[in-house]
Length: 178
View 1 (cartoon, rainbow, N blue to C red):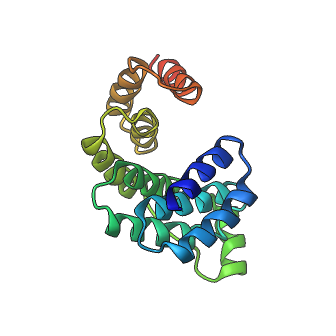
View 2: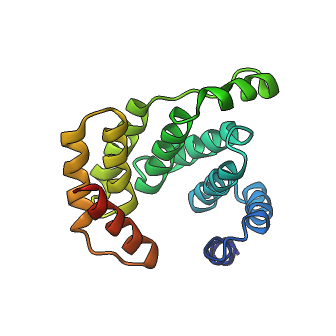
View 3: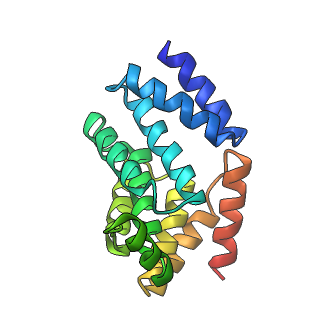
């Protein structure tokens, strides 16, 4: 049954039906709380949702991603997700942080260095994860290490994409490597 939910979840993610996907995954997590495939997909749902409302779900995203990592240590997808979480939180501007403080009390905090640490761990586990290599370049750029940023942009620009999304990421790496 979990496999059928995972297949349905992946299809809903491709179709960008995030609200329906979130409902499915929250129900699946209640039924299969120790299934790492369900758990990381739920964390991804919250991450997708956070793109619509960046602060409100940030705590849930990290909570589920950390739980997923406990269930499956060194999983490159979860490590990447935690890196993305840190990167996104580190990118929150002063105005958004001020509004979040008023709405939620203390907003989540993270640094680009924390993001980099997760991305590097993900890269050790799966050096062919295109989006991760691109984010390594972006994180080094955010840390003002332009030499390392270019190194990763060049690396991603030479990778073989396996999907349309990866083709766009490879193209973005090529553009940023110049």
